[in-house]
Image 1 (cartoon, helix red, strand yellow):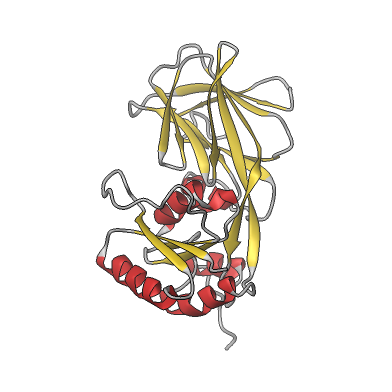
Image 2 (cartoon, one colour; image 1 turned 120 degrees about the vertical axis):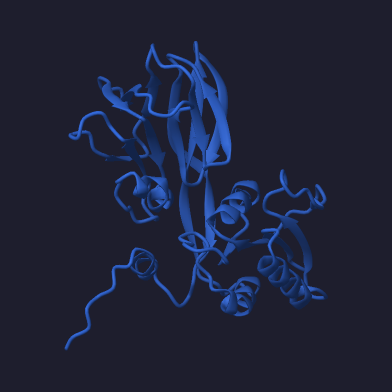
Length: 282
């Protein structure tokens, strides 16, 4: 039985050409379908409703990878992330290595690692009004710039911690190298089950990030005088929040299955992307 391969790519020349070449290589042996990674801006053909991919190929940067993973990768299909962007923490396969990685993945010989993702839900007046799964992070901030936000954090039913900051990042270990890192948060190995809580431009310098086990009950409460507050999931989904809204995060039952680069360890990727080159012995 032929595998079903879904190619998700940016609408840019390099990605379009690589998508066409990949489709040509696989046709005749596998069922292949191509879609754009930003359908709102570039609407294109959608796969049939009964098209359940056994492998997802992302051609672009981390944004393309996140779209592909959120839409299809959380259903159990392994995802190959090819980096055609600049940074590429998630999309880590070099374009020239795609043919060999595809052959290994479709032959059942690829190195696949599971990554923990996070569920969050928004509660208002005792009712759940929104629920979603995030791969990188859920970010709470003000829609108006330069406005201090008051937030409370409860962990495992403890008394609240109070944050006064421009916002708060709730990140997975996968997302530790995204907005969390830019905001001064720590890098966490992606195989761990944890949530990173990082304030954005806190009012006091003593306020720092914390790393918490995902089996704890972690809850963020919006302050009573806070208005125009938004929650952004993976930079692609926005929820408007009200005073006293509660955001609960937990470990998701869904798992991201990532086809990893067989020629590079995650720590090597981290070293290269962050410029942590070791000194050669003289």
